[in-house]
View (cartoon, rainbow, N blue to C red):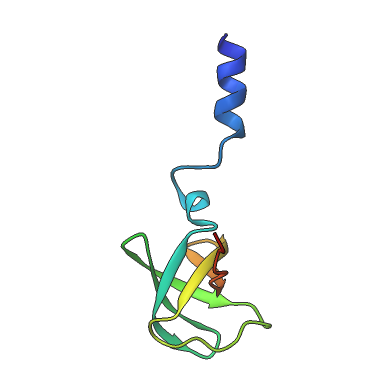
Length: 82
């Protein structure tokens, strides 16, 4: 019983820390060139974008794709079709 519970716990995505931000949608609050600020889950984060990302404008929706230190890397929001 304990082993199967541990396996379920480890196989779930992170719910705390920086890992929990990956895949979450946010909003651009300031942007200049390849860097700026985004609001994700109510908190402001420094952000960068990949070389292939289009320029962002204030209010654009983004998805967090990864992080380095306390800076998140973002991409345009991938709208999910239901």
